[in-house]
Amino acid sequence: MNNWIPLLETDEFKRIVLDSLIFLVKQKKLEVYGFVIMPNHIHVIWSGSKMNGKEKPFASFTKFTGHRFLSELRKTDEGLLARFKTDLLNRNYLFSQTNALAKKIHDRKMLEQKLDYIHLNPLQPHWNLVSDPNDYYFSSCSFYEQEDKKFDWLTHYMDAI
Image (cartoon, rainbow, N blue to C red):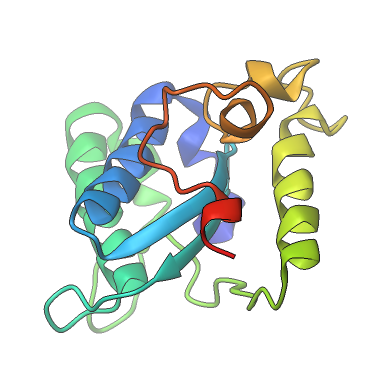
């Protein structure tokens, strides 16, 4: 999220992120292999296979979530919305970083390392969100560790690599 503002502290805003991912998966614009939604940032391992009209899937994702965040904040928290105000010529609010740290995953070992990292993120001492990573709802950890079907729109990385 922009400037690490904890926009994603509430489940409502986390669900906006999930809705966006699910929509793009169902439209066959990308495949998601893993994710975690933290209070002020997200980690997603995905591959974007098809353009969404004239946009790449990442642009569609940020546009969709941005519009939903804006709509919700206008209704519920103008003060928090003001923290996302920007002077950019092409937009009034900016919810995501313009320099997202996308990294190309080169092989299965690297993908597994990244999955471990994101799945353990909620356990970090500065977050301390859960004691077992499978208990953090907004993560793909239980999909892999417990074959949990709540995120049945995910693609198991073993099916893709």
